[in-house]
Length: 103
Figure 1 (cartoon, rainbow, N blue to C red):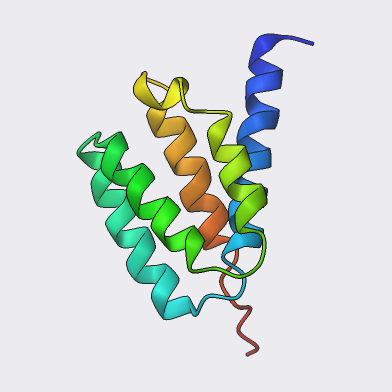
Figure 2: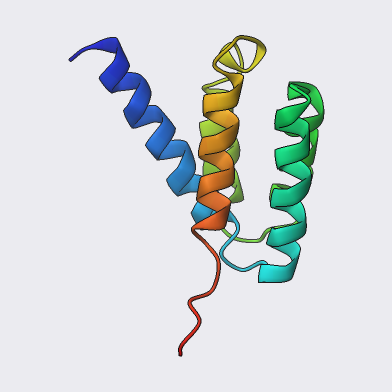
């Protein structure tokens, strides 16, 4: 398996664990969190991003441990150009946990 495929799988895994960690949070809370996370991504502030994500995950009752464990795998990469890939995977995971609205 190529290293890019492994990296893509790891990104999908962190997105899925982010989704599970934030399922119980309100959509309003997640919208505010995503907005703030996108601003830190834009500023390339990985330390603030990590602090915000860990703080938010700690307030979650379910799936937080798996999410934090997934995030640990990316500690070295968070300080490189791959920060944006990892951060956007987390944001996409959080966004995929929004409640489904019935029309």
